[in-house]
Amino acid sequence: MIDLHLHTTASDGLLTPKDLVRYIHSLQISACAVTDHDTNEGVAEAIDEAKRIGMCCLSGIELSCLIGNESVHLLGYFLEEQPEPLNSIVKNEIQRWRAERNPKMVEKLQNLGFPIQMNDVLAEANGGQIGRPHLARVLVKIGVVKSVDEAFDLYLAEGRPAYVDKIRMELKDGVQLIHESGGAAILAHPFVYPFIKAYGLKRLVRTAKENGVDGIEAYYSEHTTSQRRRLERYAMEFGLIVTGGSDFHGPIDGQLQPGKGLGNLNVPDELLQPLMDRIEYWKTRQPATKVQANSKGNL
Ligand SMILES: [Zn+2]
Ligand SMILES: [Zn+2]
Image 1 (tube, rainbow, N blue to C red):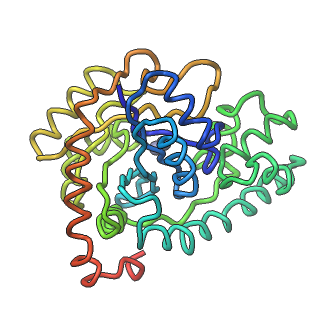
Image 2: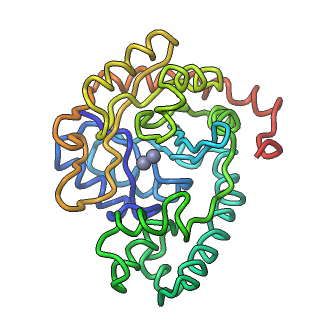
Image 3: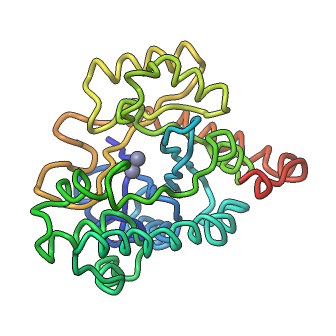
């Protein structure tokens, strides 16, 4: 059993990279990947710990991208802990976009009459990257809402009164950035996107393929078995690899578990090698593509 989609305190997860890897290891998971939102800050610590205890941990990231006006998540997997140019772009551009967004959302919440302060949000993030889940947790703490879900439903989700859009790159630019950095690009959890009903699953997979992705995350906690099988069929049809992971953010409510998801996720070990092959492919092509294109101009 493997798990290629995990979050740490470097983004909105609850466990430090080190604790996450220890926890994963205790669950007999043979290989993992740290895929924090728009940051690879936690990767080095996770890989160090994985090496120490003798398990495989891939370097990863989950980038927020756009298909038209719709938001999708793109997973990148690498051999290097701090692959370039991804590392610099994340630090210099993407983190700045995010940093500018948080005070705006806090201000909107204050204008709604809630006694939330940016300092409370910073404390909640505990030195990690700040995002909407931290704002949500503060709203729970100060008694505005009963749960993180309620905070999103009422105030923080797209279209709700405290939402501020973030600047995101086009899917093709995200894919290009990952490839130039010597990594494989995987479209995350296709069934999770609200626009999928109107857009169509097959069209989404085709669009992903046209934008250069290497594969799709078919095994996912919130995908049913039949949804996963449909994705596997389309992956085969479009020549894409299949990956999987739980999207574990920490031991919340004792529900979603690494490796097992909501119960029967069980991402098979056999999915790891095709992913490693794709990473190797892009790694060997890396110097040539780097000279041709500068992804910075495309963001
Ligand atoms: Zn995601
Ligand atoms: Zn995720």
